[in-house]
Length: 305
Image 1 (spheres, rainbow, N blue to C red):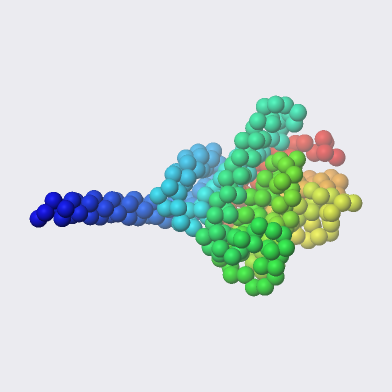
Image 2 (cartoon, helix red, strand yellow; image 1 turned 180 degrees about the vertical axis):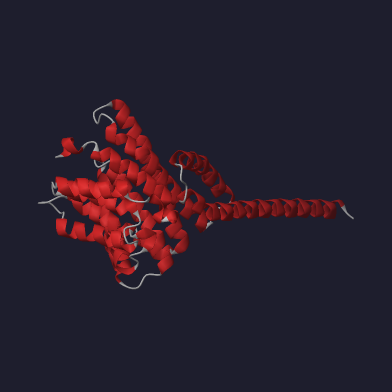
């Protein structure tokens, strides 16, 4: 064998070993994602919120690390956007309720929570890109998205869009002074309106909860419509026959307060506290958190009314 042939053979061998190693790494990463997806139910059904919090914290960076090895795995981005958003919403943002709104420490903490929602939005948009590149391009403008949503949208695409809208709404909620994010909330409104109409039961009626909350926060006399807000919350509650407690909590916390109805507020939140969190096992963790939150706001009823 000539030296040239030997060199070529060595180069080919190195390439094949490298390609095999890359393939094995991706396979391992994809397999890990599959395991994480299967284990997602264990978190949702957890009876100990503190333990669930620790589990989520450990998974966030693992997911981001896996993105280097399998950057086109749609399931990974679906898990990541949900994990970052759920962790911030369920375990971090509630702390802001009792913090001094004018404190520098509060501002720093709020920006930390916001940064997690920003990652949730980033990964949600990547999920849409991997699912439907045309729809991903439509996210660039209100008119383009409105046109894209006018016809029939594949269920897989609509579900991917949900996570974009959810993260966008959470960003505005945690930092209502960010004008750029507020400008984009119209995109979220379009998406959630489409889902509430075509796929009402997705994520246990979450699109209707989004609509009801958004209308309630806008309030009477502005762009809010209290009758539509109440109807949206009731639609979400009906999806699980009231077994999922988050829609009822959000109705009490936002709609009842917006219409200045103390009786509605206390009655609705007490219904959350008194409910059986185990009646919907696949939403047990969120039910337990909703009960904690309802108890907290019942303790502040005299401040609000």
